[in-house]
Image (tube, rainbow over all chains, first blue to last red; front, side, top):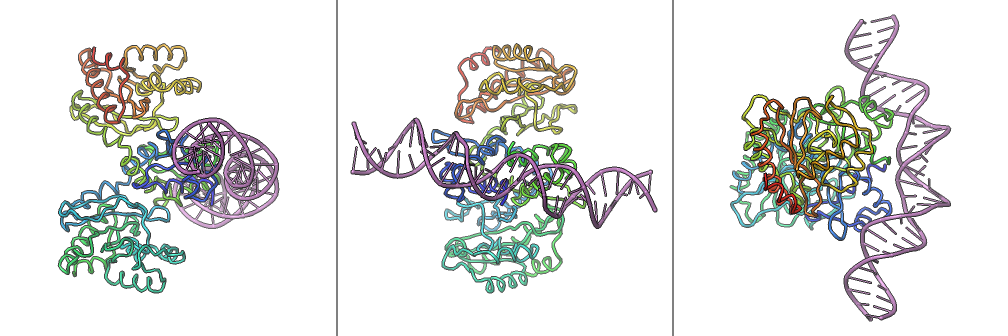
Length: 260
Length: 260
DNA sequence: ACCAATGGTTCAAATAATGAACCGACAAAA
DNA sequence: TTTTGTCGGTTCATTATTTGAACCATTGGT
């Protein structure tokens, strides 16, 4: 891996659960030498991508992101366009809605909305980089994005996050065939125990599938009626976001999402 | 400069006026060889920091920023905290308000608000990386940030953006002394012709001056009364943002901003 | 048909990055 | 109080990566 890649990969270790990371922790997480981490972080810091904070001089993300994200959204308003639809979906279903997109070769959460309906809700704060094989969003993308994505995921070692996580490539392929047939992905306790989630693929202006929209609920709350409601609202919201992104749904998905 | 720095510097060429840039243009802008640019951009693309778009395969900022900016704001909500204050300032003064922060060694615009009061307004879309010596925000930072910033700026070749841009280091030092005495920076036609702007320094949670808040108006509209109004509202808004950022104003600034 | 510019590729030579070993500071344990 | 372990940080001989002149196919303009 190139030097630039090593530096950028350090940024992926930040999360809501871990907004600040010390030098030695970076070395442990990345497997790189502490001197190497120090040099990479110093260079990121010179450009405002990270900054040091507090007496322990831990690193956190810097202000450079703010300008670049604003520029990105000014030109390709994915997040901004999707946020009202996320809120409506959460309101309509009473559950958590979230949006993720392919970032490089990873699946990154870029927006979510909680419903006020319940005290118990599925929160998204513990991780913002999701596994493909163990989330409904990931499965939706594997099913509908360019085949290279699916092949790359299945070629890797697949981690079992719960006892229910499917890690056998052949069985995952069968599940993806089912996802394509239904037009929607669904999984239970694959990534977090007792969480049932549904997801649809989202298509951008080049009609490539580059994102997914999901609704997640505690398993115990998902009755047949709620599942039907979620599927209906998810299809509707997915069509809205694809349109807002300048894409078009493949005709077979229009049909499948309407015939619910 | 290290390899990581070269790659990150490519990202600084994006602006609202230039949201997409081709490979050969990157080579011209950066002075790097086209093959070098290609390799750096390919590595940025692998991590979602840029993506290629359209038939011409130009590069634009990628979705990685969205996640990182959200993480940054979740942990250090500078932009989000400041946005309502920016809107109120624009409304109160009837002119454009904008917020910039030090990013690495540059001054980056991260927020602005327009007033609806006039058809003619100062827009911020042509550049989001501002010069220090030729903007009121930059002068505020040079006056109140760590002295190393000021020394670094004055050690560089200072560009004359208009015939009125001050580029003589000795005269700039005098202007900075005046800015410190007043507690507020002011300049006319230094960066854009016929634009009069005022700025105050902003202090973060470590009580370092890392940002500036400015109001800009067409020169012809700036009467003595409007200037007084802008100074008053700017001081008030500057104190608000510093407090929201967890910082404290130096006591001498509290005094100067009150005695207007 | 010709020319100029684009994005993209190659690989010998040049340059930058690496990481084991070390440092001082600090806090916890003995 | 002393000892131990961990932190962030630094050095420089060795190793790995980057570089860029020269080339390619494609496209659009004249």
